[in-house]
Every structure is written in structure tokens, then in C-alpha cells.
Length: 581
Image 1 (cartoon, rainbow, N blue to C red):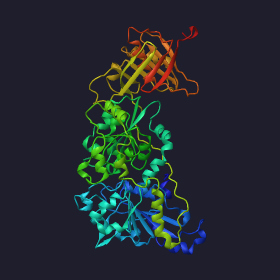
Image 2 (tube, helix red, strand yellow):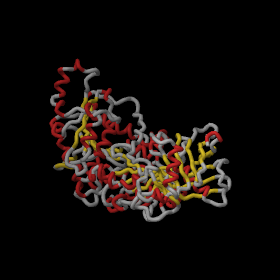
Image 3 (cartoon, rainbow, N blue to C red):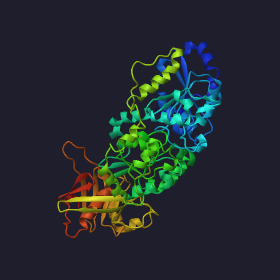
């Protein structure tokens, strides 16, 4: 759901006696007055995003008025009120919601206190099925949250009137934990995953937002919450990934469970991952964007959380850095996923492991596990909508004739830091003028050994790296000092430099070599292709690699081909004319 200003959100006070007001002031309505009222119940940010998504299956034009409330008491409720208030929806306090009557209440979590609602309650999972053992909620060590007697029963009666499950397998486990609830169980598939699969046509758009362009492939780090999660077990893994993988070949984004944000605060999350963000890590906000990241990704480095499972279900190359088997129902497909998915050694060669996993990837390998948890993938919206509308039939609300069309999920809006300002560069070249470049970001306090030479920008603030660098680049084209003047001044101040580069525009740079020779570099465009951008640091790194080999000619006028992984650009070099000297 798109965001609109919070001033459009309605406070609960305005809805006291709303039904009576509607009867007296129907002439104020632009559309016909609603026939049925439906309440969406959120308990955590995770369940809130899911219930808002599911409630979109109910159409206002069918005579449905939608409201939302927060069922209080969760340890992970921080951030929930601002999220709902920013959606421009009807938000009621829990006290008011329990004083009113509704024709249906829908929740993507379940808690015994929901019995206080005067409405038939339909509950759904807020992840890929019911898998996690949460003793604090269930009171049982071997029953997953959502399927426990303590959550579903009150004084001998089943609280929900419908219990949506993503696969019939979960009904078998429900029969063991709470047999009284089995008659209320309904296999509805997974509307969230149906929207993910419907978003595949937007993959290029999502990848562009996440920097997976110009040959870069996207690695998405997924971490659930708690001590058994990826971040709980390996907190340094995001930093190791962004500093180990060549920056021109890989983009890295992180998806963290909303409970991580709620428990440690947004500022705390960004602070803990600050070093990794300095090296290029993008953080997906907890409200939305993770589904687009699933669609956009090439590799998934994850754990036992639902987002990792969804990624494997979408046939992404999947490696688990943590399995969470200690907190999963051992009979669940999620546990089977943890036991059977390929592993990542966080202390090993990360690049080699990713490439090896891609070479070995077989989408069919995990298909039995995925199919055991996500049923009715193509019809989930239709089945879920039909069950919700059945509760409203007595109010004269008829279900739509056509099946719901899952809309593509919104594009991601990652949190990112400014561009990396220092790299450790390695590479190779051949006699034909092809230069292979690999740049790895430098992070102060985490860099112990140089692999090659340093290339930095003028924005780098480290006290030593600019003086140790062989390449210095000014990346801002609209600078106060002219490019020729800046290059002359920098050459006199940094005697160690082999190459100086100043950006002129997106496709042209001014280059100065040790000894004083100056050239203008221009990215060349192949027929039928866009003119590629020319990164000044990458250009300077390639030129330095070419010129530092004594067997290579120092003449660049025949041009170079810069290559980073699968991407390449041909660069032409032009010396100044006699009139320009």
C-alpha cells in the first residue's frame, strides 16, 4: 500500500458512534454507505505489514469499510503505531475496537486476548507457515507459535472461527497440538508469496534500485531475530561480505526481521551495521522492500527466517549461515529446509563459496521442501478472499466474480551511505589492452593487509590512505576548481601518485600520469547500446594496472578495455591538441 501523509489517518475518537452517524448523514457520502465493517488486527510490525496486505483482498466498492487496531502486549510492538498512522487508514485504539462490533476481524498473528473482539476472528500466518518455537507465547516447548492450544483456546472454546494455513501439512501438526481447532483450519496458501511471483516482471526495476547494474550481481543477506539468527551467530558477516566481494561485480543488501528493528531501534540497527554500510551495504527498511529484494536477488545468504525460505522458493541460489534448528518445530518444512539447504562458512572464502554454489545450484533440490510448506501458490488470493467474504454474506456483501489480480510489490527504497571513498585494487591485463579490475572497499579498523594498491577519492578522510594511494580521483564534476587546476595542485601535494583522475561528466574524465602527461578519457558506445558511465576511480585503477607493468607500452592512445566481471567498457584516450597545451 502506498504511503500518504499521516494527517489523512483518522484517530479513534472520530469513530465513536460512527454507525449511528452514517445513518443520519448518508447524504454526505460520495459513495454508497458500507454494508459491512472489517477490522484488521496487528500485534507486531511483521503481522501488521501482512494484515494490511491481506486486507487489500477486501474491496471497498463491494460495500466494505476497513479499520485497523493494535492488539497490545507484544515485546516487538515498537514502530507499529507510526507505521499504521502513516498509511492513511482508519486506525482505532484497542479499547475502542473492543467496544464496537465488526462483521469480521482478520489477524496475521493470534493471541488469547483477541477473544475480546466482538467479531468472528480469522487468523493467518505472518510468515511462511507456522514453524518457530516460542515458549513465551505457547507455553509449550514442542509446539510452534500459531498452532498451540494456549493461543487458540479460551475456556474450552476455539477463539478463531477460521485458521488459515499455507499448506495442509500444518493441519496434521495442528491435530496433534490442538485437535479442537482442526475444523476451523483452512488451507489458503500464501498471498504474500503469490505477490512475489507476480512481481518477477519488475526484476530489472528492482535491481536498478539496488545497484545491481553494469554487470553487478546481487547478494541479499537475510537475518531473522534472536540468538539463533544469522546476525545473532555471525554479526560480522555483512561486513565481511561487502569487503570480500569485488565492489564492481557484487551489490550487497540486508533484510532484517522487523523484530530486530523493534528490539534494537532503527538508530541502533544502523549504528551496528555502520561499518558495513560505509563499505557499500544497503539496508532494506522493515516495512517494505524485502519482497522486491527476493525478486531482484541472485544469491541469498540467510538463516531459518521466512524471507530466506521465500527466496529459496523463488529459485534463488541459497546458502544458510545459520539454521535455527534449536528453535524450529523439528517436524516442520522449515526445519527440513535448515537441514537440507547448502551451507555458508562465514570464516571461509566467501567469493569462492558464492561462485561454487551458483555452479552447483539446482532449483529442484529444495522443491519438495518448498512445496511442503507453500500450497495453492497460484490461487491463494482467490481462496483467502472467498473465505473472508463468506463471513460477510449475511450483510449482503457479494464476492467479486473475478479472481484477485496480485499487484507487483513496491520497489525497494534501501538505506545507504554515500559512495565508497577508498579501495584496495587488484587486477590483470593482456597485450590487447584488456584490463581486469577488482576493487574491494577499505574500512578503517577492519583492513589489515593490502592485496594490491590503494585507489581513493578526494572525499576520503583517513589520515594515511590518500598518502599511500597510487590513484586519486575527484568524482564531482561540478567542482569549484577547474579540473586542470585541481590535477596540477594534487600532483604537487601527493608525490606518491601514479594516476590522477578528475570527472568531467558522466562519460568523460581528465587523466594525469606520473611525469605530467595528460589525456582525456571517454567511454565509447557500441551500436545499439547506451553510452556507459565512466567511474573515475575505476578508470584510474585500470590505467595504473596497465602502466605499472614495464613490459607494456606507456602509450594509451590506442585505448583500453576495462573489465569487471561480466561487464566491460571501451575507453578512448585523447591527448591535448597543440593549441590546448
